[in-house]
Length: 211
Image (cartoon, rainbow, N blue to C red; front, side, top):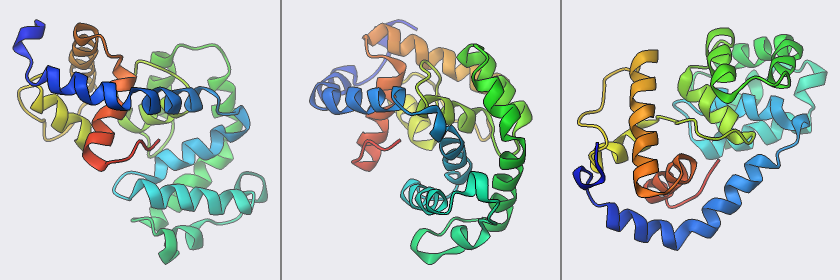
């Protein structure tokens, strides 16, 4: 698709100019995440679907305080806490327990030199609770680049700017990769990186540049 087929690109560029510094600072923070925190970043991305990012962040902070990775604590109570309630807390607590038990294998895979695309496919196929969106989110949050996080905010904005012509009811792997390719082409055409656009779209929708 040629740039002239897109819509409201000038408005998007103005918005990026206003938020560029903050967006690039956030991306640098992702790159600086310690490998010691990878487990908790993974848990965060297991918790965010259908729950608020703020509550997920607070729940992860509570887990860190009791050293969930090493202590073996059941996190159901943490997820049920009204101060940072996570929907489907029983299922997600089980997912956290499964990730904890298999984390040595997961960590070894993360550190073995695989590409971002290879890691995403492996995570989506081997970690319960992670699809392509959640795996992309996790990898972005630990410094990987050029992976689309196709949540409702992103899809809404891709439709708004005529990168896509409709929002699919569901995202199969093939649909995900097809839309990601269009998103990457859009980013290339307007000279704003895919990762920068992701955070720009999020901040436009929510008013915040969250992880």
